[in-house]
Amino acid sequence: MSAQFENLANRIFEHSGRKVDEQNRQSLDRLLMPLREQLEGFRRQVQDSFGQEARERHTLAHEIRNLQQLNAQMTQEAVNLTRALKGDNKAQGNWGEVVLSRVLEASGLREGHEFDTQISI
Image 1 (tube, rainbow, N blue to C red):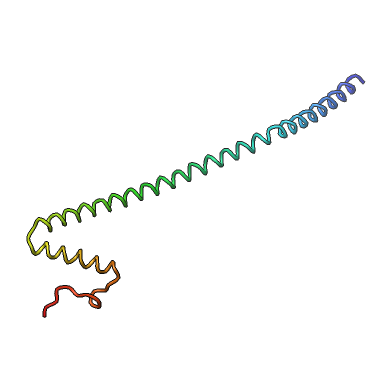
Image 2: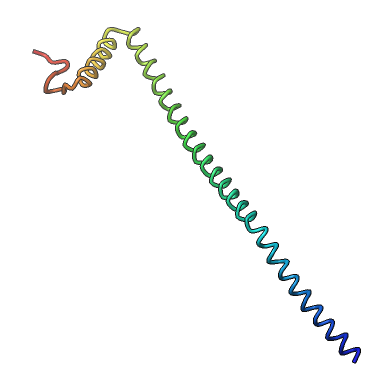
């Protein structure tokens, strides 16, 4: 009888212990759920921020390369202009024609219709 009583008491104790463990687990989950959600939101925000920063760095690098190319092109054009202005008269004349042609086209005139270059009469 005492063995049966002990066995029954152990079963009740185990059942009560499991029930208390389950209740504790549920209570702990309810307490920790807001923290988990906040941490997940923070993680997403950090990832989005790093992704956006990487895209912006890529765009900036691309724009810097474009500026370098434009700078090199402007430098070459300045060298060509300097040569034309300091060089022989034919080069100066050719450069003047190019500048005049650009000015006339920028003002809306069309070459061959409203103006001509190097015509002989």
